[in-house]
Image (cartoon, rainbow, N blue to C red; front, side):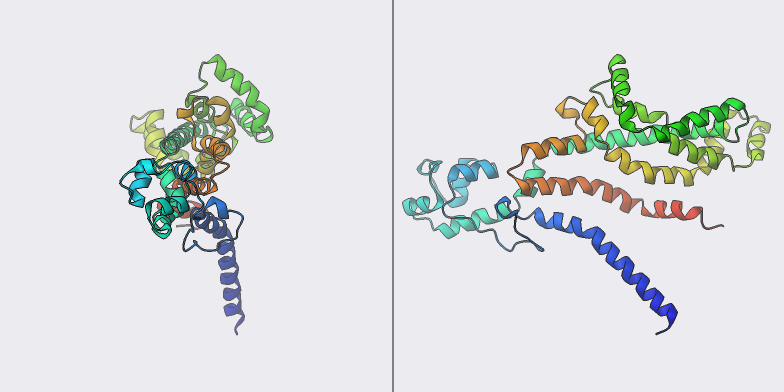
Length: 336
């Protein structure tokens, strides 16, 4: 085998194994969303073919776990009178009293148990509300971050004045300051401004930009020829014309780079959301997941399904924007 072919085969094998190892946890999470809580400790590499409901299962446990009404359960069993079925009765006792085969009741309950996690998630209004809250907070944070970082970079680019470099150094100083170090002062400031328990308490701290976005836009805008600014002023334009008609259209590459880096950070932001948001209806997705884990320690199937659904929005965003992200990452390496 030729060395070039061997190199390609090894490279392909490496990336194939890496891709499989990356996707494997998500695959297990998907399979787990169909595995009942009773079988949580068992290893499942594929969706179980059938969930076997024990004939000793009691009515009250089925109603509470599956969140069904007694009338709905009786209708599924084929009972005309739900009163003959008490909460303490087992499936075996119901069968002996009514003559309904246990297998018929098990066949009715088996798919409900199998898809219980998805049924629970589909009816969980608070989950979808928290997803909407995260989308709003993330999108507003990104828009304000990009907008103000570009404006900051357009002023600091080139360091034409001494104080420009001083401001730039202050931004760079934030690289060595951990976010938790300033969390208490930030909380006190938000309390003083009466912004706690509002989304703006999370959005506004990101609005002024950060060291990374400021560094990216400052260095990129510094490479734009000054003749473009002069041509705008000659044609009767002003600073805002130069900013919105020249700078922003030319900053597609750094904007894409900032989005790639900051999007998962804003989406997975947990600490600020936990500290600043008190109302349950304002929970972002990460805070909701934390509270959900504490509430459903006995329903792992619903937990796995909810965690899996929380990943889907980010996957959709990256799939829809993958061409832009790839073009952004390669634009600095390929000329022309």
